[in-house]
Image (cartoon, one colour):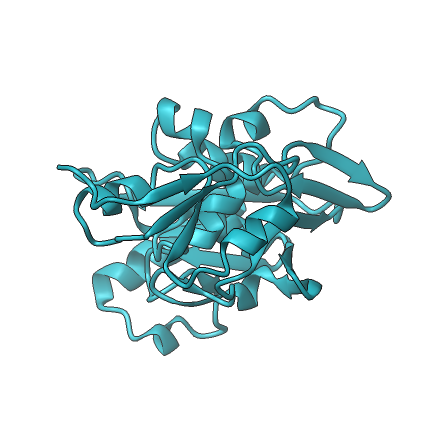
Length: 241
């Protein structure tokens, strides 16, 4: 499987990357584990790939009562953070559930969220912990709650000439965890639940990851999927730490 022909640039700054994304057929690429398979199948045919790997958007820091995660931070980096960083356990659980070792080594938290897979593990965690996503465009930055970021399958609030540059997670001190039931063939969750205090983020059960409604019947799930969701939430609450 070979992708259609495309041009390639590797910007040195966010501003340059945003300028390149003015091309309506351009696509940003981070880890590449989501976009490249689509390109090989020709389900995605960007005329220009804007490689974000050279941008200074990596790392995790604590700023007062906020944990700041650069969008190009890999899942693997989250799993090996210094114990002094109070990252919610739910986010560590979600990062550990992503793909396999190779994917976790290269896949980025921002890239995964921007891809907006309806069965994204990390998205459920970001919603449950109340993360705020920082989006940058040539006009400046704006902040969006993770729970509002996903609007459909593989669709977010991101505009063409806009990048997710940072996640901001409040230091809440609440117990949290993530539990999922995975499809044995694909490895993606049939139902996954992240909990943080009373908040719950769900994945694999709707057109996009979302905050759990008060009544699960609102999702229109069949009996089997509703049972999986209920058990995932209960087990996540029991595993919260």
